Length: 525
Image 1 (cartoon, rainbow, N blue to C red):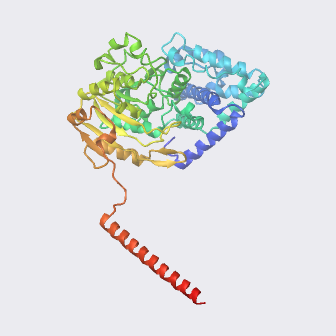
Image 2 (image 1 turned 180 degrees about the vertical axis):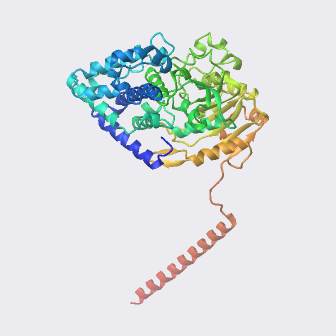
């Protein structure tokens, strides 16, 4: 949000946005309905963004009364080529969000109107440099879906409420956004949808604070970076954190990512636009990264940040070509077919620039399991690629309580040691999940930067230590947790037990005496 907004105002806006989004869905499952809310937000954003861009040019030229939204379509068509070249797409004035909204209540064919508008926006980029960035962006916004209603009238009623609801989101004027409000709201809604959807939604979504930590770790000592890459980019939130952490225009080489799920791939590209990343500054591909990587011509990358899927299956040795793939062949062995985690690690180190850093969220099992994974760890350690391993708290991610790790990789380290950090207590509890605060993140980054031993928290391990531990990279192997149990004085405890026993024996003797006296009294009577 803009700097003038307080955190409280930002949170109030977020609550209002979620209330609108939640109310709009009606009987439609929230996870399914997210495509409509986010798609409508995207439609509103690019309409306002394009409109402002054209208006600003006219206002700067002295035509202060000019309004693109009020222009006749026939006049606007003269701007088609210039706008597609500069912004990557074109929208007719009559097809802008504001003008479609104004007629929505009385449009008996609103579903067809929206479908036509979305097709026209995508088609405007066909044959141009931005074609791949626009293609299929509205595929998940199905205006004829039965989920919206059983009849056309019901669907149109829902679509009209959707447009009105998104219009009511107080996101301000695009020209006044220091940090784009649409992008901020989009990230918030993605978080809410993921948290409400449980595992099905959370599996592709990295919480914002974890994204910040990965980016901070990957940019220590840097004011800007070249190309940023995520081989399993999901909705793109992790990629975009680089600009949020470093500042606007501090990612000089652009954003690159690959995502196998086409729905999530579309969300990622929308996310780029909503964060005002120009179409020629990002390249997101939809394919299997391990089998069909799409950025051979763009690597190496100075910053790689990723939260790849945990322990998924992949082709592995069943595909005879992969052992000769330059990404995997240096280790001499492939990751197990049932667990692709190490394949992502090898892919990242292969595409990492000599001056770069990769920060990757990992399933803890890959740090200690034997077999092929142990041999790959041996390769990574022996070549001095493993800079740091950080144990995170459990329950940080949506849909899983697993205590994950972060592996930080570098190619040009200044020493041949690996830092192990136990950050399992660096969190606060928020409802059912744990969360990293800004203080938690700052402490972890500070320990990472200083690269020193801290009792019970951090240890800088030598190559020999890791060799002696058979290349086990679990943090607990190198950092012993503080024993917080109460210290017991055994001598004093034994003395106390003796005293209690003696007292117990005395009490028994006293009781026996009293009973005998009572029995004697009874006999006398």
